[in-house]
Every structure is written in structure tokens, then in C-alpha cells.
Length: 291
Ligand SMILES: C[S@@+](CC[C@H](N)C(=O)[O-])C[C@H]1O[C@@H](n2cnc3c(N)ncnc32)[C@H](O)[C@@H]1O
Image (cartoon, rainbow, N blue to C red; front, side, top):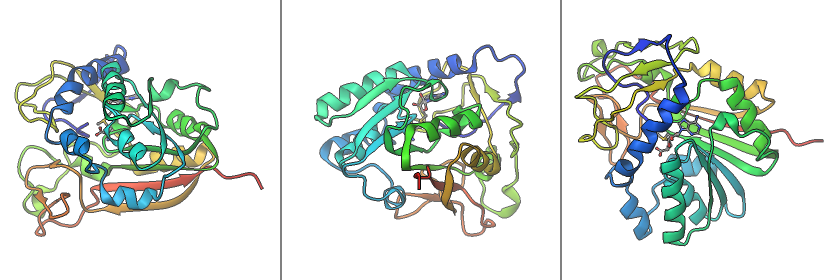
């Protein structure tokens, strides 16, 4: 997930299949994440909710609704929505994630469906089936073609259905990762805001630790795309959706940059000395119902 990873990130012109590289990375990291404190799987098994409060408040009551969860990883959030009453289908490119999600669904006796698929290759499989399409936190950087992503969301929604995304703000993604951000002059960009639709390539680095488990370093190269806010909004509008709400927030859900401080609400913010910047955004968009 980290929206950017440090070190030697260069625009790549020798991609191979970026999605195959990313799939291998996610297969490798899935068991590490399932065992990490970050994901709070044991708390979830004990009955705690792991979804963030601001997301639950914005998505609203899901009981009795059908929900497609894009990039569901090992199914934790999907199963949380299912426990809140939604009929959830989770999809993810990682076979290891889908296997783990399916196992958790059986183990915890929380019914849900999990399907291995690239978001960009869902075809007509889910056309018009869902009241809600949901995706969150570290999802967009793995999607190269946001226009196709927007179309896939629009066709999966029922008329009148709602799409919701909570994601790292691309302004946050630009911030340098070399030193703690404890004053405004340290809040300078190191990564591009406009991704130009070309992914950054991240090769394994000895000291490049994982966002959920600092002791783990991947063996895999990944490819990640930077998308300005305008590209996200245009993708949804051009797919025929209506933007209902757009919010920007000064917090993130993990310590994305050195110097961030954890609040009592469990969210991370830059210190008050640093100029206020948007660190996350959320969008709610709906598929118009026929008149
Ligand atoms: C950081 S997780 C984001 C989900 C969730 N918020 C979380 O933290 O568990 C990113 C997920 O996206 C999946 N993924 C990456 N590229 C994908 C693609 N093109 N289609 C479907 N899933 C993809 C990965 O396998 C991974 O499980």
C-alpha cells in the first residue's frame, strides 16, 4: 500500500507486465499483513470493528445492501461490512489474499464472496449488481488506467447505487520521505503530483520496510501510479457518475511520513507547526437512476 516507497524511484520505460509484478508482491506480503498489528485481525476476530469511524459515518447504513469491495486484500474490511449487514463480494488481484479472505469468511462464519480478479478485467461479470461499490486506503496507486477503473465501477452499480472511496491524498503522496516533517520547510515534494500515467518502479531495497510490518522487506519489484485528484474525479464523471460529496482531511490512517503524530482517534497528523495540507480524501458518487 504505501503510496510511495523511498529510494531510487524512477519513471520506468521497461515495465514488462506491471500487474504481474504487483500480484507477486501482494501474494508475498499477504501472510505478513494478516499477522501484523496494523491490521488488527485478532481484535476483529474478538468482535471489534476495524473500519475507520469517518468511513463508516460517510458510507452510512449498509444493512441489506449488496456491496462490491474492490481491492479487498485478505478481506478484513469486507468481512467487517458483511458483519454490519451487507452482502459483500470482494475482489482482489492476489490469489493469496483471496484464499485468506475465503478462509476467514468460513472460520468466522461471516458469509461473503471473494473473487480473484484485476479490477480492470472484471468485464461484464458484475454488471448492475451492486447497491454500493467500495474501495479504500492504498488502492488507486495500483491502478494504471483510471478511465477504465471509472467505467468498471459505473457498470457494477445498480442505477441509484453509490460508489465510495477513501484514499491517500495525492498531495500527501508527493511529500518527501527522507527526513522527519516537523516544520513547514520539511514539507517539500519529492514525488510528482501529476503522474503522467506512467508508473513509478520500486525495486526491493534493504531498508525499505513495509507499512504494516516494519520488520518485513519485500523481494518483489512493484509498479505504482500517481493520480492527481482531477484524474480521479474526471474518471468518475466521464463514466456517467454524479459526484455527491468530496472531502479532504488533514490526517492519514498510518504513519505515512516521519514526524507524524498519532491522535487519540488513532489517526496520524503532521505536527501543528507544519503548514496545513490535505492528507486524505473521500468521494461519494452515484449512478443516476432512470427517471
Ligand atoms: C493496500 S491494499 C488496499 C486495501 C485495504 N484498504 C487494505 O489496506 O487492506 C491493496 C490491495 O490491492 C490489490 N490490488 C493491487 N492491484 C490490483 C488490481 N489491479 N486489481 C485488483 N486488486 C489489486 C492488492 O492485491 C492488495 O490486496
